[in-house]
Length: 386
Image (cartoon, rainbow, N blue to C red; front, side):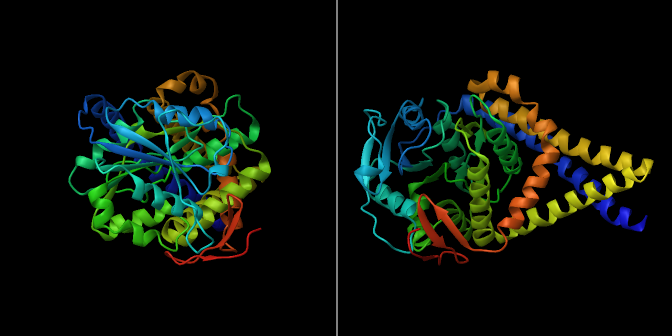
């Protein structure tokens, strides 16, 4: 039974350690949400959302960004050309900035962001970035901006939560898979800022020389994170800036998307990728050892399997509970479907291992119809359009 202990014991220990920080994370989320309601610091802001063709629910997503409960902000929709913006989706208050981006090593999204930043009104002292497939709540910008006034904070991030409505199997699988990433944001310095809910003071943006970090890059959020950290500042998490994503996906779309996300992480945040790979090898190895031992008639194997599954399912339940608190507009959805984050957690563990393995062999990604060969840091090389 030595093989059993070598595989199952580390998996159970890792699951216990993973649960250890959940209480602190829950307390942090509750505190931030309470402070958000009391915050009165609302500096003038520019919200920038890049658009590249049609996204499911795009008109509603842009309308949500145009109707935020925030006293002084402008909304810029950035695109390469006017043809990239579908007709009938723009709210009246949105301002369009076109980059006319040319073929280069710098990703098209980043070129659009740079053009929008350059065109931002002079009175704005905060830049906030959103994605076109997310639907923020009315307090999104208030929550995202609030931590910027704190000492040592260079950038603030929210994160996404997929709430497909109506749900289907693969869209729910994507949500459970993505929830594992959401569960890593919490108090103190965070690993990275997510580009779909990201804010930085203009003064910090310029002092940290973010535009230079963006040159030659494909990932806007990882490179902004590197710039902020190199400036000796940290990325703070704003749970109230969680973005609902009610769109859908197919199996093929999900695996292509997950592989792209993890390939970018392996290139720009290798320590995160290796931690995830090591953890899921241990989890899945321990689960497999417990199943084999249980099928061989070992009661110890049965208990080991129950322990590992229960710990993972408990963490999944906690993630969904905190997400429901961050997305009060979607409370009815969570009441119906929050159970998937508990009961599908073991399935998501194996899917994580599959997607991690699939991202280990190539640095090539396809993003919004363009193919990129990624290199470490900000030196990706652009290849031919697929």
